[in-house]
Length: 197
Length: 153
Image (cartoon, rainbow over all chains, first blue to last red; front, side, top):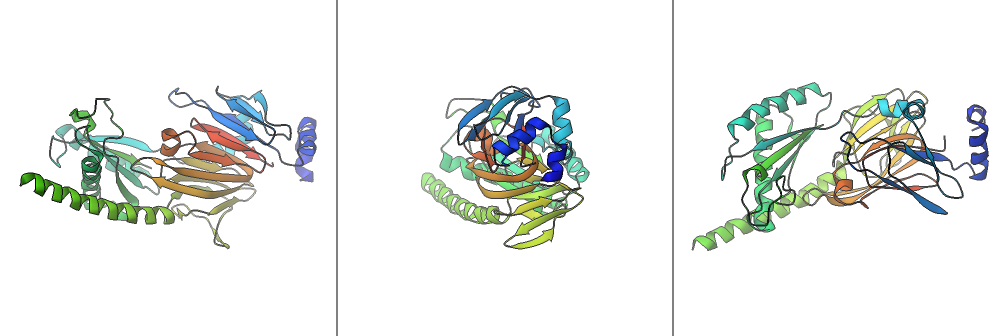
């Protein structure tokens, strides 16, 4: 701790003493696609909500102290952690011919992109998520969506992707990509989403 | 008659689903994520044992990752959350309960010291209280996805 204190600013040293060595910071980063974002910081003596990119808080024994950070500051303090980030999951969507365990022609072409993404990654693992449209109950759609995912998983295994690296799940009609009323058939909702990670 | 057959098939599928769900939750308990990047000195502590952490290793609930002065590590969780720690860090995966059909669950991690980058995943997207990151002095509730934090450094 002593050598670290030597490097720290006077203000930080003061904060360390006041907080009984329980220091730390949090900085909210910009979202990749500009979506809304927030982190709530709770301490024994107060809380703060960060909403804007680079909104930040220092932890102290009088609660979180809000401040504005910057890309340079984040890089200086968190560069190593950010450099260690795993590659983001790559998402692919495959569509089915209505009422069949058969991919549309368009989707058959996408399958090749899935394999090349898997080949690019050092330790690939694959999440396969089946979806249905809004026709029928959860009791019908949950197994159907899982069946679609298992069909895609089987195809991946046939093409030499290791079974232990593929998880297949079914979300039923819970995540419609085209929002519809319950009971409405829609081909874009009958799909399997693949995350290569 | 056709209805009856349909019902029978449906029940069969339900039973299969229940079986898959049961085996799925077992798989989740034993396999909640994977080490995707590792540099320098990184160790994994599991049930009181410490071992060198390597890229490709599967993670379990209660695992603790530690990095040395030259170390860093990056992991992908089953719900697509991405966590990565910089040097001199201790990160514990305290709880990871993930029900993939509903995206419901609970993910609690703790950064005892060091630096951490977080990109939250499907659970946090589904419900704002599903993911927390603790430090010795603060609790972070994850509403959005990308942030960095430090503790005791």
